[in-house]
Image (cartoon, rainbow, N blue to C red; front, side):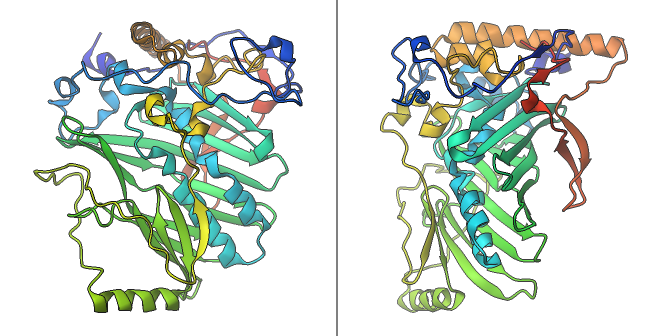
Length: 466
């Protein structure tokens, strides 16, 4: 085994001649007699999603991340095999699906007649997409090449399919669509992770595209940078920073959002500020808030009046910013964490959904995240054999069996390496199943496009990756 093979988590998939074809007509309705192990049902017979994981968070107290990362300062971490104990029991494909937690904002945007009103709600949705990362310091499992994840929420009016389309570099593509043909939300993520000594910086390269079909509008943006502090010692904490530009390709409107770095005294921790401008670059609305709490919108004149008043009273001193590359002697989470100060005349755009009281014992998952790896009764026969829910290492970790999770992870990694070597010897190229490389029609850049057909439940030529 060469050094390259040694460090790749999960390289490729073994093709299989096995195929399956099933019906999805009964996917969300089950016979209550099937439910066991204390699971609950609603009176109308619909499955009630779980509110807790099968086991509590696995302790990391006896493991040293420094022993693994001490030779990796400044390096990209995609080739470093991390012990499973530093993971959380979700695949990165499932983590991507958490963008959909606040889908009600998309439905709200679809219902609005004014373009600026729609833009500010889309901006709130873009912020809400990263809210679930707060205090989520566990690393999601790297998806295997060919791995998929589906999420269907009839009560929220959408369905999503994602696929790991590349491992070098690691690229995850997803496509969500409204069940009533109101919107499509899609993109591909290429996460680049680097270790800087006391922190890990994550750059989520890739473009998000939201299409509001009724209004014939398309919005695109990229997510902010993310930094996890105190990797070696101290309490782990997360900040998001960087500029996010949301473009309405139909009207020319833009929303520029600044995810502020923490600053010297923590005054800007979690803060997001920005504005909406029209095609002529006239400011139409100011957006402000925190990505961990809520977002507000206000008229620019009222906002400027408030800022001038703050400067006169000296209540808004200039802050010194920092980045992950420049580490300070004290990298502790700042104690100053003010809540959002609401300016009179502001309109609330979005407020985060409170986490369950026992979230800290469940990898700091939101209520939404808790449900993502659940296998509902009868679902296993309906899923593609490549779905994340069928991964034995993630399932073992979810149940608190760290030894089995580690052994299964190693088995899957070796199986994938063997498949890659076999294809290399046969001079074969990997073929994606549900996405193809194409051109984003709105940005003109290369992007992975959903080819359709997944929800017909005809799983021909599914790779045997587990």
